[in-house]
Length: 54
Image (cartoon, rainbow, N blue to C red; front, side, top):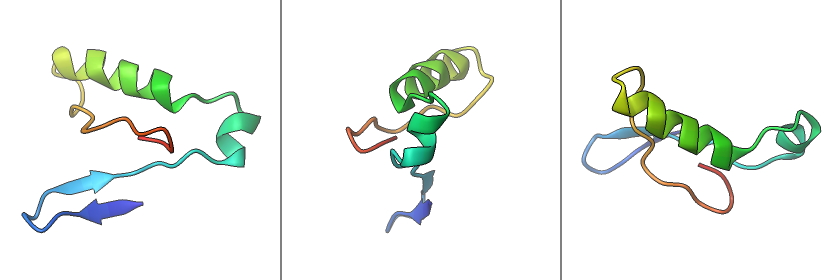
């Protein structure tokens, strides 16, 4: 889901869902991977990790 803040910043929120569990996907692992990739300049930094998804 694409979200736009009042400031105009845009974010993508990917909630936990049955499909993530079915494929063994972890939003926590995705968050950690994005943190590493953003440090290397390969991706944008994740904004926040929520229990419901990132």
